[in-house]
Image 1: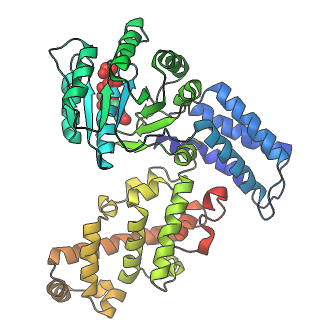
Image 2 (image 1 turned 180 degrees about the horizontal axis):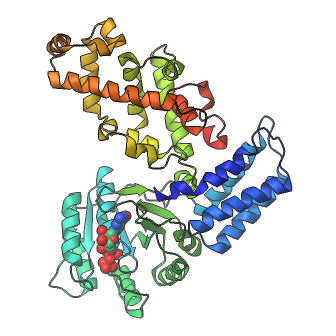
Image 3 (image 1 turned 180 degrees about the vertical axis):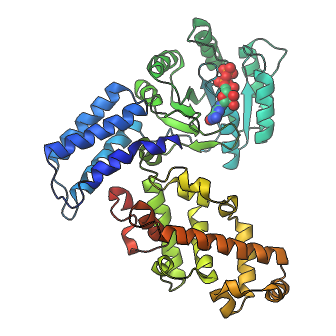
Length: 461
Ligand SMILES: Nc1nc2c(ncn2[C@@H]2O[C@H](COP(=O)(O)OP(=O)(O)OP(=O)(O)O)[C@@H](O)[C@H]2O)c(=O)[nH]1
Protein backbone atom coordinates (compact mmCIF):
# COMPACT_ATOMS: atom_id res chain seq x y z
CA UNK A 1 0.00 0.00 0.00
CA UNK A 2 1.02 3.53 -0.67
CA UNK A 3 0.88 4.53 2.96
CA UNK A 4 3.92 2.39 3.65
CA UNK A 5 6.66 4.85 2.90
CA UNK A 6 5.64 7.67 5.16
CA UNK A 7 7.11 6.74 8.48
CA UNK A 8 10.71 5.79 7.90
CA UNK A 9 11.79 9.03 9.56
CA UNK A 10 9.45 8.36 12.46
CA UNK A 11 11.05 4.97 12.87
CA UNK A 12 14.44 6.63 12.78
CA UNK A 13 13.42 9.05 15.51
CA UNK A 14 12.06 6.26 17.66
CA UNK A 15 15.20 4.23 17.14
CA UNK A 16 17.23 7.08 18.59
CA UNK A 17 15.41 6.48 21.87
CA UNK A 18 16.71 2.93 22.03
CA UNK A 19 18.18 2.30 25.48
CA UNK A 20 16.72 5.40 27.10
CA UNK A 21 14.50 4.97 30.14
CA UNK A 22 13.10 8.49 30.37
CA UNK A 23 11.94 10.98 27.79
CA UNK A 24 12.95 14.60 27.69
CA UNK A 25 10.67 17.34 26.37
CA UNK A 26 12.89 17.54 23.31
CA UNK A 27 12.54 13.81 22.65
CA UNK A 28 8.77 14.07 22.82
CA UNK A 29 8.72 17.14 20.62
CA UNK A 30 10.78 15.42 17.95
CA UNK A 31 8.46 12.43 17.91
CA UNK A 32 5.36 14.62 17.79
CA UNK A 33 6.84 16.55 14.86
CA UNK A 34 7.49 13.34 12.93
CA UNK A 35 3.98 12.09 13.58
CA UNK A 36 2.55 15.38 12.45
CA UNK A 37 4.59 15.19 9.27
CA UNK A 38 3.42 11.63 8.54
CA UNK A 39 -0.23 12.39 9.20
CA UNK A 40 -0.33 15.69 7.34
CA UNK A 41 1.24 14.13 4.30
CA UNK A 42 -1.35 11.36 4.57
CA UNK A 43 -3.97 14.14 4.26
CA UNK A 44 -5.20 13.97 7.83
CA UNK A 45 -7.06 17.14 8.80
CA UNK A 46 -4.87 19.74 10.53
CA UNK A 47 -7.17 20.18 13.54
CA UNK A 48 -7.22 16.43 14.14
CA UNK A 49 -3.44 16.30 13.93
CA UNK A 50 -3.10 19.11 16.45
CA UNK A 51 -5.52 17.51 18.91
CA UNK A 52 -3.67 14.24 18.64
CA UNK A 53 -0.29 15.95 19.14
CA UNK A 54 -1.49 17.60 22.33
CA UNK A 55 -2.67 14.34 23.85
CA UNK A 56 0.53 12.52 22.93
CA UNK A 57 2.70 15.31 24.30
CA UNK A 58 0.75 15.48 27.51
CA UNK A 59 0.70 11.75 28.15
CA UNK A 60 4.30 11.08 27.15
CA UNK A 61 5.58 13.62 29.66
CA UNK A 62 3.13 12.89 32.45
CA UNK A 63 2.95 9.10 32.46
CA UNK A 64 5.86 7.11 33.84
CA UNK A 65 6.95 4.14 31.74
CA UNK A 66 5.99 0.96 33.63
CA UNK A 67 8.92 -0.93 35.13
CA UNK A 68 10.84 -2.86 32.53
CA UNK A 69 9.52 -0.77 29.66
CA UNK A 70 11.87 1.35 27.60
CA UNK A 71 11.04 4.96 26.86
CA UNK A 72 10.71 4.03 23.20
CA UNK A 73 8.15 1.30 23.82
CA UNK A 74 6.30 3.52 26.22
CA UNK A 75 5.91 6.37 23.76
CA UNK A 76 5.02 4.00 20.93
CA UNK A 77 2.26 2.60 23.09
CA UNK A 78 0.90 6.06 23.79
CA UNK A 79 1.06 7.01 20.11
CA UNK A 80 -0.70 3.81 19.19
CA UNK A 81 -3.46 4.23 21.74
CA UNK A 82 -4.08 7.83 20.82
CA UNK A 83 -4.21 6.90 17.14
CA UNK A 84 -6.75 4.17 17.88
CA UNK A 85 -8.77 6.89 19.58
CA UNK A 86 -8.54 8.96 16.43
CA UNK A 87 -9.49 6.37 13.81
CA UNK A 88 -11.82 4.39 16.07
CA UNK A 89 -12.91 0.79 15.90
CA UNK A 90 -14.53 -0.46 12.71
CA UNK A 91 -18.24 0.14 12.12
CA UNK A 92 -20.31 -2.52 13.77
CA UNK A 93 -21.86 -4.69 11.07
CA UNK A 94 -23.55 -7.76 12.54
CA UNK A 95 -23.60 -10.77 10.26
CA UNK A 96 -27.36 -10.95 9.97
CA UNK A 97 -30.29 -9.60 7.99
CA UNK A 98 -29.90 -5.92 7.27
CA UNK A 99 -30.32 -3.12 4.77
CA UNK A 100 -27.43 -0.81 3.98
CA UNK A 101 -27.69 2.37 1.92
CA UNK A 102 -24.58 3.71 0.23
CA UNK A 103 -24.29 7.46 -0.23
CA UNK A 104 -21.61 9.60 -1.79
CA UNK A 105 -20.61 11.84 -4.63
CA UNK A 106 -20.27 10.70 -8.22
CA UNK A 107 -17.25 8.56 -8.86
CA UNK A 108 -16.50 7.98 -5.18
CA UNK A 109 -16.92 4.26 -5.77
CA UNK A 110 -20.44 3.48 -4.55
CA UNK A 111 -21.43 1.08 -7.30
CA UNK A 112 -18.14 -0.78 -7.06
CA UNK A 113 -18.33 -0.85 -3.26
CA UNK A 114 -21.91 -2.15 -3.33
CA UNK A 115 -20.81 -5.22 -5.29
CA UNK A 116 -17.67 -5.66 -3.20
CA UNK A 117 -19.59 -5.50 0.05
CA UNK A 118 -22.14 -7.95 -1.28
CA UNK A 119 -19.25 -10.26 -2.19
CA UNK A 120 -17.83 -9.82 1.31
CA UNK A 121 -21.13 -10.68 2.99
CA UNK A 122 -21.57 -13.69 0.73
CA UNK A 123 -18.17 -14.99 1.87
CA UNK A 124 -19.48 -14.73 5.40
CA UNK A 125 -22.26 -17.12 4.49
CA UNK A 126 -25.05 -14.59 4.00
CA UNK A 127 -27.16 -14.04 0.92
CA UNK A 128 -26.73 -10.46 -0.22
CA UNK A 129 -28.53 -8.53 -2.95
CA UNK A 130 -27.51 -5.29 -4.64
CA UNK A 131 -30.30 -2.86 -5.47
CA UNK A 132 -29.22 -0.27 -8.02
CA UNK A 133 -31.21 2.98 -7.84
CA UNK A 134 -28.87 5.24 -9.81
CA UNK A 135 -31.01 6.62 -12.63
CA UNK A 136 -28.78 9.66 -13.00
CA UNK A 137 -25.62 8.25 -14.52
CA UNK A 138 -26.05 6.46 -17.84
CA UNK A 139 -24.24 3.18 -17.59
CA UNK A 140 -24.65 2.81 -13.83
CA UNK A 141 -27.26 0.07 -14.27
CA UNK A 142 -25.11 -2.00 -16.59
CA UNK A 143 -22.01 -1.56 -14.46
CA UNK A 144 -23.85 -2.58 -11.30
CA UNK A 145 -25.44 -5.59 -12.98
CA UNK A 146 -22.13 -6.84 -14.30
CA UNK A 147 -20.37 -6.40 -11.00
CA UNK A 148 -23.15 -8.15 -9.08
CA UNK A 149 -22.82 -10.99 -11.56
CA UNK A 150 -19.10 -11.20 -10.95
CA UNK A 151 -19.73 -11.18 -7.21
CA UNK A 152 -22.34 -13.90 -7.77
CA UNK A 153 -24.99 -12.10 -5.74
CA UNK A 154 -28.65 -11.24 -6.34
CA UNK A 155 -29.30 -8.02 -8.21
CA UNK A 156 -32.18 -5.69 -8.93
CA UNK A 157 -32.25 -2.62 -11.12
CA UNK A 158 -34.52 -1.28 -13.86
CA UNK A 159 -33.03 0.80 -16.67
CA UNK A 160 -36.53 1.70 -17.89
CA UNK A 161 -37.68 3.20 -14.62
CA UNK A 162 -36.51 6.73 -13.84
CA UNK A 163 -37.87 6.89 -10.30
CA UNK A 164 -35.11 5.83 -7.89
CA UNK A 165 -37.46 5.60 -4.91
CA UNK A 166 -39.79 3.28 -6.79
CA UNK A 167 -36.80 1.15 -7.86
CA UNK A 168 -35.59 0.96 -4.27
CA UNK A 169 -39.00 -0.19 -3.03
CA UNK A 170 -39.45 -2.74 -5.79
CA UNK A 171 -35.85 -3.87 -5.42
CA UNK A 172 -36.32 -4.84 -1.80
CA UNK A 173 -39.52 -6.72 -2.64
CA UNK A 174 -38.02 -8.49 -5.66
CA UNK A 175 -34.96 -9.65 -3.71
CA UNK A 176 -36.78 -10.58 -0.53
CA UNK A 177 -35.00 -13.94 -0.36
CA UNK A 178 -31.74 -12.16 0.30
CA UNK A 179 -30.77 -11.29 3.86
CA UNK A 180 -28.41 -8.39 3.29
CA UNK A 181 -29.68 -5.63 1.01
CA UNK A 182 -27.18 -3.13 -0.27
CA UNK A 183 -28.85 -0.14 -1.89
CA UNK A 184 -26.63 1.80 -4.27
CA UNK A 185 -27.73 5.39 -4.85
CA UNK A 186 -26.93 8.01 -7.47
CA UNK A 187 -24.13 10.52 -7.04
CA UNK A 188 -23.70 14.04 -8.37
CA UNK A 189 -20.61 15.99 -9.28
CA UNK A 190 -21.04 18.16 -6.23
CA UNK A 191 -23.25 18.42 -3.21
CA UNK A 192 -26.63 19.49 -4.55
CA UNK A 193 -30.05 19.80 -3.07
CA UNK A 194 -31.41 17.30 -5.56
CA UNK A 195 -28.96 14.62 -4.50
CA UNK A 196 -29.74 15.10 -0.83
CA UNK A 197 -33.50 15.06 -1.42
CA UNK A 198 -33.33 11.88 -3.47
CA UNK A 199 -31.27 10.23 -0.78
CA UNK A 200 -33.71 11.25 1.94
CA UNK A 201 -36.60 9.79 -0.03
CA UNK A 202 -34.79 6.52 -0.62
CA UNK A 203 -33.92 6.38 3.05
CA UNK A 204 -37.60 6.85 3.95
CA UNK A 205 -38.62 4.13 1.52
CA UNK A 206 -36.14 1.42 2.54
CA UNK A 207 -35.65 2.26 6.23
CA UNK A 208 -32.02 1.07 6.33
CA UNK A 209 -30.14 -0.28 9.32
CA UNK A 210 -26.98 1.51 8.20
CA UNK A 211 -26.12 4.46 6.00
CA UNK A 212 -22.54 4.32 4.80
CA UNK A 213 -20.77 7.25 3.20
CA UNK A 214 -18.44 6.23 0.37
CA UNK A 215 -15.36 8.43 0.05
CA UNK A 216 -12.48 8.37 -2.39
CA UNK A 217 -9.20 8.01 -0.47
CA UNK A 218 -7.91 11.05 -2.34
CA UNK A 219 -10.46 13.28 -0.67
CA UNK A 220 -8.85 16.13 1.18
CA UNK A 221 -10.46 19.09 2.84
CA UNK A 222 -13.84 18.40 1.20
CA UNK A 223 -14.45 15.39 3.41
CA UNK A 224 -15.73 17.37 6.35
CA UNK A 225 -18.35 19.34 4.45
CA UNK A 226 -19.60 16.31 2.55
CA UNK A 227 -19.85 14.29 5.72
CA UNK A 228 -21.74 17.04 7.45
CA UNK A 229 -24.35 17.37 4.68
CA UNK A 230 -24.94 13.66 4.34
CA UNK A 231 -25.02 13.24 8.09
CA UNK A 232 -27.60 16.01 8.51
CA UNK A 233 -29.75 14.50 5.78
CA UNK A 234 -29.79 10.80 6.63
CA UNK A 235 -27.36 10.19 9.47
CA UNK A 236 -24.07 8.50 8.62
CA UNK A 237 -23.18 5.33 10.53
CA UNK A 238 -19.91 4.53 8.85
CA UNK A 239 -17.49 5.36 6.06
CA UNK A 240 -16.15 3.27 3.19
CA UNK A 241 -12.78 4.52 1.94
CA UNK A 242 -12.15 3.51 -1.66
CA UNK A 243 -9.14 3.52 -3.99
CA UNK A 244 -6.56 2.95 -1.29
CA UNK A 245 -4.58 1.07 -3.91
CA UNK A 246 -4.02 4.29 -5.83
CA UNK A 247 -1.72 7.15 -5.04
CA UNK A 248 -4.00 8.54 -2.33
CA UNK A 249 -3.20 8.37 1.33
CA UNK A 250 -6.59 7.96 2.92
CA UNK A 251 -6.10 10.24 5.89
CA UNK A 252 -8.58 12.81 4.56
CA UNK A 253 -11.48 10.50 5.23
CA UNK A 254 -10.71 10.62 8.95
CA UNK A 255 -12.22 14.11 9.05
CA UNK A 256 -15.50 12.61 7.84
CA UNK A 257 -15.37 9.98 10.53
CA UNK A 258 -14.75 12.64 13.15
CA UNK A 259 -17.43 14.95 11.77
CA UNK A 260 -20.12 12.28 11.76
CA UNK A 261 -18.92 10.71 14.98
CA UNK A 262 -18.95 7.43 13.08
CA UNK A 263 -16.27 4.93 12.11
CA UNK A 264 -14.73 3.23 9.11
CA UNK A 265 -16.50 0.14 7.83
CA UNK A 266 -14.55 -1.02 4.77
CA UNK A 267 -11.50 -0.20 2.70
CA UNK A 268 -11.55 -0.54 -1.09
CA UNK A 269 -8.24 -1.63 -2.55
CA UNK A 270 -8.89 -2.23 -6.24
CA UNK A 271 -11.45 -2.50 -9.00
CA UNK A 272 -12.35 -6.16 -8.63
CA UNK A 273 -15.15 -7.46 -6.42
CA UNK A 274 -12.70 -9.14 -4.07
CA UNK A 275 -10.67 -5.98 -3.51
CA UNK A 276 -12.22 -5.07 -0.21
CA UNK A 277 -11.05 -5.26 3.38
CA UNK A 278 -12.97 -4.87 6.56
CA UNK A 279 -11.44 -1.89 8.34
CA UNK A 280 -9.09 -2.81 11.16
CA UNK A 281 -7.74 0.01 13.32
CA UNK A 282 -4.25 -1.21 14.12
CA UNK A 283 -3.40 -2.03 10.54
CA UNK A 284 -4.68 1.28 9.27
CA UNK A 285 -2.69 3.21 11.87
CA UNK A 286 0.49 1.32 11.25
CA UNK A 287 0.04 2.13 7.61
CA UNK A 288 -0.79 5.79 8.24
CA UNK A 289 2.39 6.10 10.23
CA UNK A 290 4.24 4.11 7.60
CA UNK A 291 5.25 1.46 10.06
CA UNK A 292 3.88 -1.66 8.43
CA UNK A 293 1.11 -3.67 9.95
CA UNK A 294 3.05 -4.42 13.08
CA UNK A 295 0.35 -5.70 15.35
CA UNK A 296 -1.16 -8.10 12.87
CA UNK A 297 2.22 -9.30 11.72
CA UNK A 298 3.48 -9.96 15.21
CA UNK A 299 0.33 -11.88 16.09
CA UNK A 300 0.50 -13.99 12.99
CA UNK A 301 4.18 -14.65 13.39
CA UNK A 302 3.81 -15.65 17.00
CA UNK A 303 0.91 -17.96 16.28
CA UNK A 304 2.61 -19.65 13.38
CA UNK A 305 5.85 -20.04 15.22
CA UNK A 306 4.27 -21.43 18.35
CA UNK A 307 2.65 -24.11 16.23
CA UNK A 308 5.79 -24.91 14.30
CA UNK A 309 7.92 -25.10 17.39
CA UNK A 310 5.43 -27.36 19.07
CA UNK A 311 5.53 -29.73 16.17
CA UNK A 312 9.21 -30.31 16.00
CA UNK A 313 12.43 -29.64 17.67
CA UNK A 314 13.89 -27.48 15.01
CA UNK A 315 16.17 -24.53 15.42
CA UNK A 316 15.23 -21.92 12.85
CA UNK A 317 18.31 -19.86 13.69
CA UNK A 318 20.23 -22.39 11.62
CA UNK A 319 18.50 -21.10 8.55
CA UNK A 320 20.40 -17.88 8.75
CA UNK A 321 23.70 -19.71 8.76
CA UNK A 322 24.15 -22.87 6.82
CA UNK A 323 22.71 -24.65 3.84
CA UNK A 324 18.97 -24.42 3.23
CA UNK A 325 17.79 -28.01 2.92
CA UNK A 326 14.47 -29.41 1.72
CA UNK A 327 13.71 -30.19 5.32
CA UNK A 328 14.11 -26.49 6.15
CA UNK A 329 11.94 -25.63 3.22
CA UNK A 330 9.17 -27.85 4.47
CA UNK A 331 9.21 -26.08 7.85
CA UNK A 332 9.32 -22.75 6.14
CA UNK A 333 6.37 -23.59 3.90
CA UNK A 334 4.32 -24.75 6.85
CA UNK A 335 5.08 -21.59 8.79
CA UNK A 336 4.33 -19.36 5.82
CA UNK A 337 1.15 -21.19 5.20
CA UNK A 338 -0.07 -20.52 8.69
CA UNK A 339 0.81 -16.86 8.47
CA UNK A 340 -1.07 -16.35 5.24
CA UNK A 341 0.06 -15.74 1.70
CA UNK A 342 3.69 -14.69 1.38
CA UNK A 343 2.92 -11.49 -0.47
CA UNK A 344 0.63 -10.33 2.33
CA UNK A 345 3.21 -11.18 4.94
CA UNK A 346 5.83 -9.19 3.04
CA UNK A 347 3.39 -6.28 2.79
CA UNK A 348 3.28 -6.10 6.53
CA UNK A 349 6.99 -5.88 7.14
CA UNK A 350 7.82 -2.30 8.09
CA UNK A 351 9.92 -0.42 5.62
CA UNK A 352 9.91 -3.17 3.04
CA UNK A 353 7.46 -1.45 0.72
CA UNK A 354 7.04 -3.03 -2.68
CA UNK A 355 10.80 -3.30 -3.27
CA UNK A 356 11.75 -6.82 -2.47
CA UNK A 357 8.37 -8.20 -3.45
CA UNK A 358 8.83 -6.96 -6.99
CA UNK A 359 12.14 -8.77 -7.22
CA UNK A 360 10.66 -12.11 -6.27
CA UNK A 361 9.48 -14.46 -8.98
CA UNK A 362 5.70 -14.86 -9.16
CA UNK A 363 6.14 -18.44 -8.05
CA UNK A 364 7.26 -17.33 -4.64
CA UNK A 365 3.78 -16.05 -3.97
CA UNK A 366 2.05 -19.16 -5.17
CA UNK A 367 2.18 -21.21 -2.02
CA UNK A 368 -1.31 -22.60 -2.17
CA UNK A 369 -2.58 -25.31 0.09
CA UNK A 370 -2.80 -27.72 -2.80
CA UNK A 371 0.76 -27.15 -3.93
CA UNK A 372 1.93 -27.49 -0.39
CA UNK A 373 0.18 -30.84 -0.04
CA UNK A 374 1.71 -32.12 -3.28
CA UNK A 375 5.15 -31.06 -2.12
CA UNK A 376 4.63 -32.76 1.23
CA UNK A 377 3.70 -36.04 -0.41
CA UNK A 378 6.70 -35.81 -2.71
CA UNK A 379 9.07 -35.12 0.16
CA UNK A 380 7.70 -38.18 1.94
CA UNK A 381 9.00 -40.26 -0.95
CA UNK A 382 12.52 -38.89 -0.70
CA UNK A 383 15.39 -40.43 1.18
CA UNK A 384 17.10 -38.70 4.10
CA UNK A 385 20.10 -37.98 1.89
CA UNK A 386 17.91 -36.40 -0.78
CA UNK A 387 16.17 -34.18 1.76
CA UNK A 388 19.53 -33.03 3.08
CA UNK A 389 21.09 -32.51 -0.31
CA UNK A 390 18.49 -31.87 -3.02
CA UNK A 391 21.13 -30.68 -5.45
CA UNK A 392 22.25 -34.29 -5.89
CA UNK A 393 18.84 -35.38 -7.13
CA UNK A 394 19.11 -36.42 -10.77
CA UNK A 395 16.70 -37.64 -13.42
CA UNK A 396 16.59 -41.26 -12.23
CA UNK A 397 15.78 -40.14 -8.69
CA UNK A 398 13.12 -37.77 -9.99
CA UNK A 399 11.49 -40.70 -11.78
CA UNK A 400 11.63 -42.85 -8.67
CA UNK A 401 10.25 -40.09 -6.42
CA UNK A 402 7.44 -39.34 -8.88
CA UNK A 403 6.48 -43.02 -8.99
CA UNK A 404 6.70 -43.36 -5.24
CA UNK A 405 4.59 -40.32 -4.53
CA UNK A 406 2.12 -40.81 -7.38
CA UNK A 407 2.85 -37.28 -8.59
CA UNK A 408 4.01 -36.03 -11.99
CA UNK A 409 7.76 -35.73 -12.60
CA UNK A 410 6.97 -32.15 -13.50
CA UNK A 411 5.71 -31.49 -9.96
CA UNK A 412 8.86 -33.00 -8.48
CA UNK A 413 10.90 -30.68 -10.66
CA UNK A 414 8.77 -27.74 -9.57
CA UNK A 415 9.48 -28.59 -5.97
CA UNK A 416 13.21 -28.66 -6.67
CA UNK A 417 12.94 -25.34 -8.51
CA UNK A 418 11.01 -23.86 -5.63
CA UNK A 419 13.73 -25.04 -3.27
CA UNK A 420 16.41 -23.43 -5.41
CA UNK A 421 14.48 -20.19 -5.48
CA UNK A 422 13.92 -20.16 -1.73
CA UNK A 423 17.56 -21.05 -1.20
CA UNK A 424 18.54 -17.99 -3.23
CA UNK A 425 16.12 -15.90 -1.24
CA UNK A 426 17.57 -17.11 2.05
CA UNK A 427 21.06 -16.31 0.84
CA UNK A 428 19.89 -12.83 -0.02
CA UNK A 429 18.41 -12.33 3.43
CA UNK A 430 21.49 -13.78 5.08
CA UNK A 431 23.59 -11.24 3.29
CA UNK A 432 21.52 -8.27 4.26
CA UNK A 433 23.47 -7.39 7.36
CA UNK A 434 21.85 -5.77 10.33
CA UNK A 435 18.61 -3.91 10.15
CA UNK A 436 14.94 -4.62 10.17
CA UNK A 437 14.92 -7.10 7.34
CA UNK A 438 17.23 -9.64 8.82
CA UNK A 439 15.67 -9.31 12.25
CA UNK A 440 12.26 -9.74 10.73
CA UNK A 441 13.20 -12.81 8.76
CA UNK A 442 14.68 -14.37 11.85
CA UNK A 443 11.53 -13.62 13.71
CA UNK A 444 9.43 -15.03 10.92
CA UNK A 445 11.39 -18.22 11.16
CA UNK A 446 10.82 -18.31 14.88
CA UNK A 447 14.12 -17.09 16.30
CA UNK A 448 14.21 -14.99 19.42
CA UNK A 449 11.67 -16.95 21.43
CA UNK A 450 8.44 -15.50 22.69
CA UNK A 451 9.33 -11.84 22.33
CA UNK A 452 7.53 -11.45 19.02
CA UNK A 453 8.93 -8.58 17.04
CA UNK A 454 11.86 -7.79 19.24
CA UNK A 455 12.34 -4.11 19.86
CA UNK A 456 9.14 -3.14 18.21
CA UNK A 457 7.34 -1.95 21.22
CA UNK A 458 3.77 -2.54 22.21
CA UNK A 459 2.92 -4.11 18.89
CA UNK A 460 5.06 -7.11 19.64
CA UNK A 461 3.59 -7.84 23.03
N1 LIG B 1 -8.39 1.42 -8.13
C1 LIG B 1 -9.60 1.46 -7.59
N2 LIG B 1 -10.63 1.90 -8.31
C2 LIG B 1 -11.84 1.93 -7.75
C3 LIG B 1 -12.08 1.51 -6.41
N3 LIG B 1 -13.38 1.66 -6.15
C4 LIG B 1 -13.94 2.18 -7.27
N4 LIG B 1 -13.01 2.34 -8.24
C5 LIG B 1 -13.17 2.89 -9.59
O1 LIG B 1 -13.65 4.20 -9.48
C6 LIG B 1 -14.54 4.50 -10.55
C7 LIG B 1 -15.84 5.03 -10.00
O2 LIG B 1 -16.46 4.02 -9.24
P1 LIG B 1 -18.02 3.79 -9.21
O3 LIG B 1 -18.27 2.64 -8.35
O4 LIG B 1 -18.57 3.77 -10.59
O5 LIG B 1 -18.45 5.15 -8.53
P2 LIG B 1 -19.90 5.62 -8.09
O6 LIG B 1 -19.74 6.32 -6.80
O7 LIG B 1 -20.87 4.50 -8.15
O8 LIG B 1 -20.26 6.67 -9.20
P3 LIG B 1 -21.75 7.20 -9.57
O9 LIG B 1 -22.60 6.01 -9.80
O10 LIG B 1 -21.55 7.98 -10.80
O11 LIG B 1 -22.19 8.04 -8.43
C8 LIG B 1 -14.70 3.23 -11.33
O12 LIG B 1 -13.85 3.28 -12.45
C9 LIG B 1 -14.22 2.15 -10.37
O13 LIG B 1 -13.67 1.05 -11.04
C10 LIG B 1 -10.94 1.04 -5.65
O14 LIG B 1 -11.01 0.66 -4.48
N5 LIG B 1 -9.74 1.03 -6.30
